[in-house]
Length: 248
Ligand code: 13P
Image (cartoon, rainbow, N blue to C red; front, side):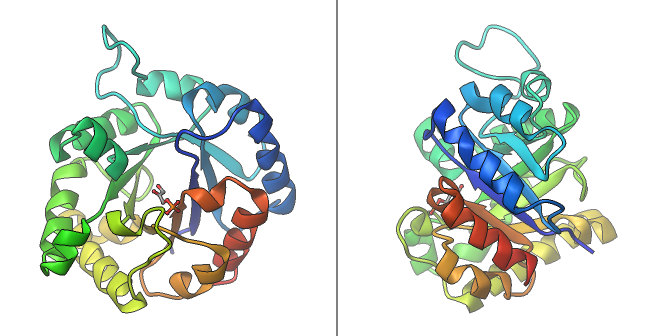
């Protein structure tokens, strides 16, 4: 049985004042049946993790360098993320693939570093609108999955997030049938590669998840939760999404 997960990616939003969202989430979701994760910008990792110690809310980073340490100005290692008290790291988000040119191989190396650092990797994959319209979504996603997921992955150290690029921040989402088709294909790939353990790896949907569409998305087969951007910035938006997941 896979534990459901509601993960929030704050992207480059938030200051210390935003951490009151965490107080509201941990108060509203004591003993939640779902894993709740917030991924704030790096300067907030330590205060966020401190604030959530012993609560139902876990903290994650939004990226992680593949190397353990060294001359990589501006970057953050898995050791540093773990030392901050965070327990997750997103890698391979389409915004980083697009803006920084992260390839599948680089994402895989980052995910490997995350896992070796004792953290859970949330590996993102997603097709562009052009790829979707050309009927290439499934092959593109399978290729991204194969290239981005490290060999040592299992249900405890890997979460996969399917985020169609054209659904991020646009208010558009795929049809529920399209989400189900993708998640079923990803599950088959994971089981094909990791055997029964592939059935333990959680699959999140991400892209314009809101309180109004969350219940329908969570009722879709093989959707174990969501990776939420904009609607994770406010407790009044993210809380109902967590509630919809808990009751799905
Ligand atoms: P939105 O929920 O704002 O569409 O962002 C999704 C996302 O990119 C989460 O990583």
